[in-house]
Structures are given as C-alpha cells and as structure tokens.
Length: 77
Image (cartoon, rainbow, N blue to C red; front, side):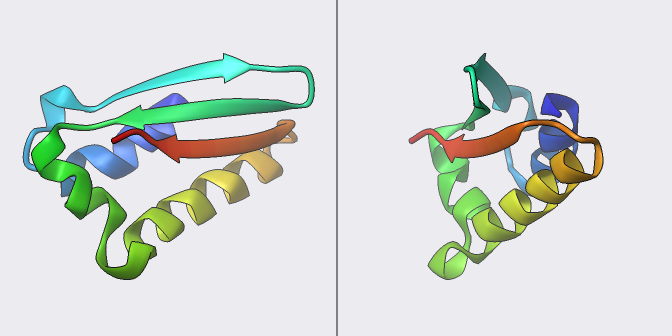
C-alpha cells in the first residue's frame, strides 16, 4: 500500500525524493503517515483539501479491493 501512496504523490510534488511513508499496524487498522517536503504540503493537500481527499479515496478503495483491514492515511505537516 505504501508503494501505491508513493506512486500517487511523487509525480505531483516538487521534491519527490523527500516523499516517504511510514506505517503502523494496529489491531483493527493500519495507519499510514505521509511525509513530504514543507514546500509541497500545499500541493498534496490541494485547494480545500480536494487533492488529499482524492488520494485517500484511491488508497481506501485499493485497500478494500484487496481485503485489507481498515486503513487510515495521515498527511504529516
């Protein structure tokens, strides 16, 4: 799942080498934290959070299609 997140985010940011994903697996869900360069936060969040919402929609749909447990994606600032 982290490879999917990286594949979505790296093309839209100005510093693709600074993009990284950390994850923490808990009993009922897996939490992914997305880290990007401070200059790229606005690009990842988008106007009114639309880009972030779209990224989450794709990731959550992919997780559901593969039978993963609940997934939560956080964008670290």
